[in-house]
Image (cartoon, rainbow, N blue to C red; front, top):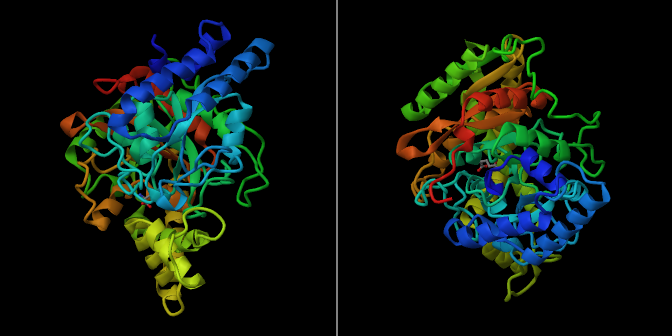
Length: 495
Ligand code: GLN
């Protein structure tokens, strides 16, 4: 099997057996990036010398017998993660000249595991978007069709893995930015339970919703990546102090005691009525129904459930996320780092010009909305009300998990759309995340896996939402599905 289509386990075994060196593997992916990135714009920064130096160190570590499963494997990071010595732009002109002096916790963990930093991936500016069209560095294109968006905000990471320019990548998910681009690019992506992956060194958008997670071809690969990414970090005050888990532990048997032919026997899946109604495109519905039939054939049972408050998820999110963003983004003032206007009068004028020049339109829209909903006189009417809705949404899930083990449905209401199709209408753009946002508001884990193709031969994603800390079992369910389907092995034509 060619390295770009191999699983992480296969790559790890080939490295361990000495069939392949990390330098060769890294060079192979760097060559693929050099050839395809001009078409896709998936990477903002590649630094072959820095990556190859890490690969050499990984090969030495293999030789010395201290390697772990990911030692020598190249991993691309969304450009939201600070990495020492690497430019870290967050897709913004504001940080276009910023080289990070330190590593994010996640970057540190991958480095400690011996993974090779392959490059920094394009993204929507400050992770605000669903199409990767708000990046200062230009849009990313979908490898399945270059006239279509890859989804956002982690569109560069998703396109890179889909086009086999990286075996794995990281992303962040505030309202769907891992699951939605994974679905639109035909790969697997996981948003973990809030608090499992440290946010230290991850540029903040909406801190109570932001959560880092992995992208890969398969659920089994995601489990290996989450083993590295997850873990307590005292530098993030919302990081959860828990016993380390092995997220690969349910790959063989996700449901205790299930029989060999029916590995999902005993698994109760809830299908929210609100996720299958108006707004769901028929081609996506067809693919998701077929995937559910496959899960039933594996032994799972399905039943309709209600998440009545989820209709209010998008409006509540677009109060809470901008409110937190308006506060988080106040640090970009041109004083200590990042962009500073070349010409200005006094200090206030410097702030104004710097922020006017440094931020794009979507970021400015969010800062204005956020400042408005937090201001005296509107706080109770908008912000407080949104927080109450957030609680109702979490309560809906808690009730649902009393009767089912996991929730299943579409990741996104449509397949990828054309570049430019929704840029003039923010509300249409926001509605892309209607099925992903509820899990962020509740802090629950969500997984998207490839589930076939819809209109225009574009990929469809199946979403699983689990209860808190149920990642291992969700990955197990995804893995069983991927043992009997090959959607996750399909490669976009030309790659
Ligand atoms: N599309 C959503 C937004 O624009 C979610 C983005 C994200 O998850 N980072 O806010």
